[in-house]
Image (cartoon, rainbow, N blue to C red; front, side, top):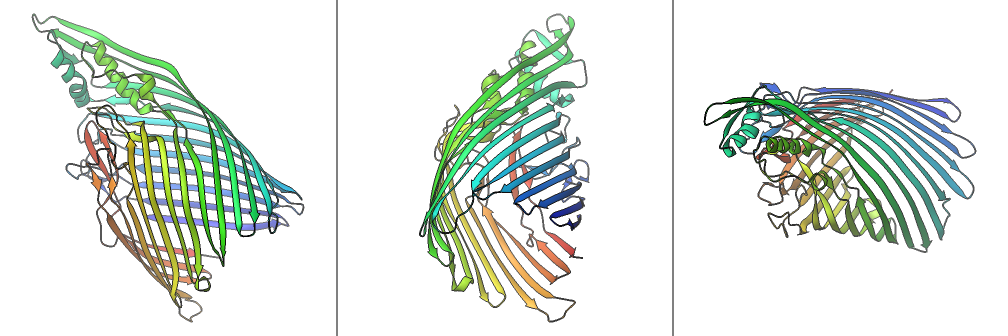
Amino acid sequence: TLRLRASTHHALREGHGLGAALWYGRSDGFFTNEATGRRCDREESGGARIKYQYRGERGLRIDNTASVSLLAQGGYPYASALTGSIAYDDPCSYDRLFVSDGLTVRYDGAACSVASVTSYQYTHDDMRLDQDFLPLPYFTLRQDTRQHAVTQEVVVRSRAAEGDGYGWLCGLFGFYSRSEMQAPVLFKERGIEELILRNANAHDPEYVFSWLEPTLALDSRFRTPDAGLALYHESNYRTGRWHFTLGVRLDCEHVRLHYDSRTASRYRAVRRSDGMTLDLPLEATLRGTLRQSFAQVLPKAAVRFELGRGSDLYASVSKGYKAGGYNTQMFSDILQRELMERMGAPGGAAYDIDRVMTYRPEKSWNYELGGHVTAAAGAVRGDFALFRIDCRDQQLTVFPDGTTTGRMMTNAGRTRSLGGEASVTARIWRRLDLTLAYGYTRAVFRRYDDGRCDYRGKRIPYAPEHTASAHMAWSIPTGIGWLGDVVLAAGARGVGPIRWNEQNTLTQPFYVLLDASVRLEHPHYTLDLRGDNLCGTHYDTFHFVSMGNAFLQRGRPRTFRIALNIHL
């Protein structure tokens, strides 16, 4: 793995500055696809950024940042949960072009400041998947997406007053995005035979079916215009050691999905009784538009009490919200079932497009109590927080039963997350620093019945129960001018257990990753020698299901690196 980066900053003239950066990276990957004998997670990336700043004498500030980046990845290190091997025969890759520009204009007046933030983003994603992730010719997916997005935000806030008093801010935020996606699924020989013909032949007593073409293309095209507007206000009041905050936000969003899915092929039907043969066309088309509108009022309140010397206590309550959306990956399954119905074969339970393709907004109430502590003249600093999140219609990624090819987002009824986290940083001896952190989360379903199982009391997938870390760094002055300081560091990070499914039958146990480094620090350079996952711990970072087969994404193995930064 190689990473290169260069950046420069210049003052052009009084009040004007310009910065630029270039970067490039590549990696031959960590994991081998046993079906091809090649590394499957190779990567190459690069980009550039340029930033202009203006600082006027009368309170005017202007910042503009433009960037472009390119990414080309192989994919994906998905191992069978049954065999533990990564083996698939069709190419997988992910390519991305990202272009963005952001302009911030701010004016600080005597009574208030006004800031305008404008941004534009263009993204072109091209993903290719061997969607069965097996060394067999089932089916592939290519998902090509182009998206344009524009945002505009205006914030007006009162100038901060010293001592006690009242402060406020008001804001207006709007966005518009438009994405166009082509997502054809290509069924190959094994996929046609086992996912379509086997079911058709098993349920038709009169005919035997066969396919007249080597592949079957299920073509899907989507256009998704999305627009939203938000208006918000926050008031702050300070008296003595007390700080009070009240805020409210009104969010409105409208999103549409224009879909056009179609397929055309030919199949042969041979009558069992007399051998009469019919060559028949087979076509299916799904076209339409889905619409969703969301509006939500989001209040929040917080209070903070200063204990003195950098310590305080706080409490807050707020309402959270995440807009709904569409399950575009399910259209290939809907089209496949439509084909089977037209052949006279049962394709399973019929999909309700409006229900399967959409998922509702997620809403939550968030409660937090915590504080910050500073002791021993700043040598010891700590933070702690206790939280509770009550969520309705939580958005979850699920994988339908059977030989389906897609995944979908659905809404759980109610969930609750309780937990806490704490961290402390201390200088325990001269230049020897120690940092400890721990977090615990109990995230469970309070009400979630999908019609097949009742998951009440089960842990929510992908939410780690424990997170812990310890890090120690010792800075040693060498007294040699050209060498600088030597920094010795070591640490450990633990995560888990993580449940991968709603039934909690698949779990990533708690695991610990160890790291260590030796760094030379000098005003003009730093040289860092580092090792990660030094014990070579085997762990997984993601789980999913395709065609009823479970797969896991492997975590990175033991790695070593050397990094050199030069400051001219």
